[in-house]
Length: 470
Ligand SMILES: Cc1ncc(COP(=O)(O)O)c(C=O)c1O
Image (cartoon, rainbow, N blue to C red; front, top):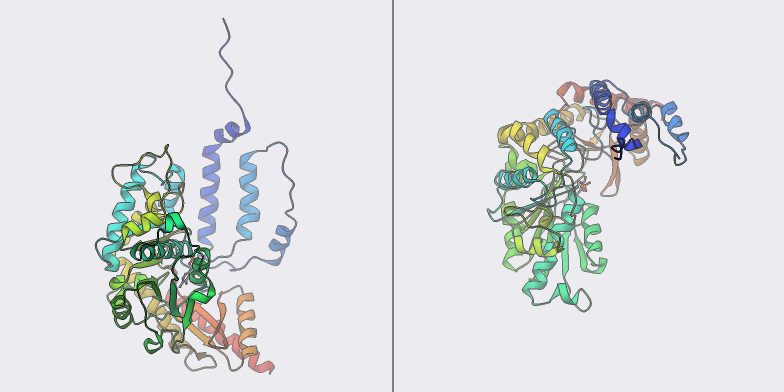
């Protein structure tokens, strides 16, 4: 008789034996990190960055203790993060992470579900359907709208514009799946010249050239001026925005979309952070008319404050989106309700609906609206704080964005560098209509009036320092 085989003790197995201490160590480190978000220095200290420079490691031949690796990661990793999920960070358009969103994310990472097919994760498929219904209602989109869960608005716009291309070619009788793009009828794309760069990137990926993209003149806020819109036709795409990345401006949907739709054009709305305005009783007006469009994108990792890697595409023409993103395989088992991969370019992907469901359910429509109002009220507070100078408000900005400059571009750039180096707050910069500006984007659930007062104080002190030098 043979002896039973001895248990397998591969390195992977050995580290699995440590799972309780690994997760406990990670949890303790996470608590420590979160406690430091308000008071910590926003950017890494120079000695920590230097330690990172020295982290040059060759491929380890044999493994080592997983707890030891995690501890190394905590010490060198945490110190070299940017506290961008804290209340003093105003760069780019950066959401924080609500406690329920983070906790649900931890759980979903533990479940490690593949959200491609219902048969792989019934819970993911069900929650995707529920979140789709909730958000279609929250944004006031047409009932037939379908939703795909992707990594962010860049990919979401890629999906939406792929659906637009599919729909247009199908309606003019061009067999795009078979014939491809060679010799296809030209599709012309129009939009404000202030569109986010992700739109041009998505269009390039889809095979469009700059010659087919017509970026039209805008007003001081970056909104498309209706009188500059040329005649459109059923092979046109009009891209509009709900929330310009610098000024927070919303295009005039009620005026522009009926015009475009009457001529048969497809209308896409980039609402990466601004579409959430629809959830607020006070900001809702900005999104009036969005329901008339054909496709929309929004990020949950921005204004909704769920952790990164959470964007959404919405499309009123389900079959255009599904056909554009379709993939087949004899081994793929169709579910009886919803297979998430039908609405995204990916097959395997994490179950993003889990933290979305938990977050939306925890806040409710009213709670989401209140969070949006909080961001907008804080933006107003900052504008009031800064109105006595020396900063000038630029771009007539609104929603959760504030854009300012000093008397000269050099002074603005110097202030920006000093503010970024301060460690107390962090803001980013941009060129706006030919001027150097400082962008302040308020998008974190932790930010309170006291943080804005501190921001204004740091900004004023920085400007004073520059003035005294001159
Ligand atoms: C208006 C707008 N569109 C698109 C994007 C791209 O979003 P993501 O970084 O999630 O791909 C952003 C990012 O800030 C944005 O502000």
